[in-house]
Image: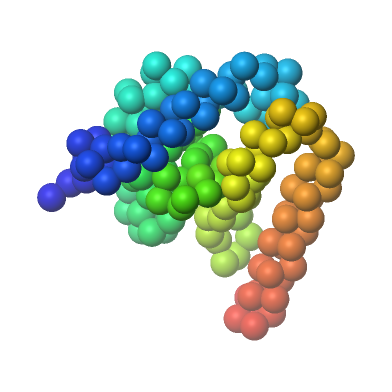
Length: 155
């Protein structure tokens, strides 16, 4: 049986409603969203966006099928690489990336491990220098891990 939007709602309806409410709130801070490079989708359009995502994920095979989850909620208007995860009570906000060096793989770049951290930052003013340093540290950490994997596998 193929996972569909009704399956998603039966499992995550309250979480999905919370995500929609969070997006509505985030849209009241357009300057912060611009600085975060987040083009948040209009929550009124999210149902169709989620349906499209679920249909797309059902067609994935291999590495993509193992990484991407149909219950992730894509929150940007023009891409399918920024998500909130309703299966995690903290609703982490992350971007997906493909790592082109061997061993090739997809990975998550967490922008915020807890959506409440983002909302607090938006309310109090986001420290963008810290945020950029945190993002770069994650990239360098990923490169170090891959280098260790390559050495271990002698690639």
